[in-house]
Image (cartoon, rainbow, N blue to C red; front, side, top):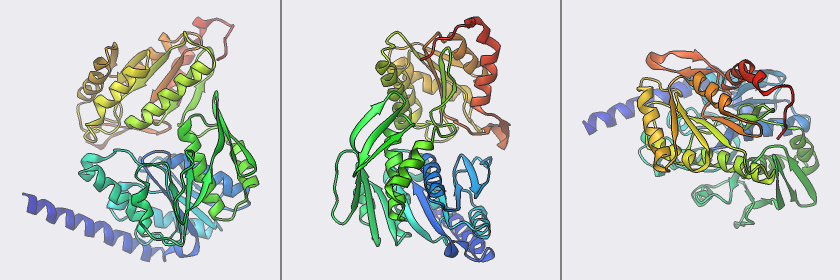
Length: 434
């Protein structure tokens, strides 16, 4: 059985490799005519792509970008409705060819471990690669965390010019071993590495919903909350500097960014906040919850509650993280509602039960509601003035994936607004702002 599995894996690997080769040939290797930046890591990829696009546009460049949020070529943009962060079957080569034809000089794309495993990064000439961070994810797909990390490193093996690295991540030394003409690192903790140009955030202050810090002589302010977004901003800053963009231009661009779709996006502001976020791993979920708890503390809203709607993204995948995500919800949330979230062909109620076990382990009560719309409605109905409702797992994704390959049109932001419209009158005309 093991032998046949190895043969099957080899066959599939060759199949994907030749698809990548054929696509590059068919579209005449477009990456040779445009500078491509690949962004990889467990968290923050989409945000870094969006920030980089804003910075290069501020610098006067015509930019193309491909992220799990949207596909953009110059001024043309559309929602990424593929339910794939890094597509195959020639989509990326086609995207790069169109970007070149439209006059774009820079293309920024998310690079996933699954995409690398299936050779989707092959025959793309990467000018620079960015490493955001690494934590356990897709373990069942890759077999181990080490194998998952190995796939990520392959992007840097393929990138000969510029490497951008998170020096504060404990896995960074594995990436530093790969050769490049230039190596740039970013840090909050003041870490240095030999032969690496360092971008360090000094005098870091976390604001109620943002942060400010200093790089060299420039004072930066970002409107994105949490430590994780400081790292995302630093990744974008270091990458932009490696391309010759000035700190003053970068600062101006970042200040203009008021939010990223589906990433800590505030969809209701009063009488309470409702926030939608893509967090779908234990680390990212904890980062979101702890950031919001700290926000309530800074505002001295000690009686306010965190009402959480969560599930476990991807039926059939990463089952290990379900109880862990429940435990995190139990630790931070005053009310935890576990619901359906992209079950694919797995029994959604079974997934809910596995997440709920983690909440119960923290001696917290949990509401189990299969219907995701009903779960959101319940969370909004329970909220009082100055509470925060946070709905995680899908962000701005336009679909919910269910059995037999079906996709149901979905948008957590839209659903939240629709359900709030039905109940908002109960709060009266006087709203208390957070």
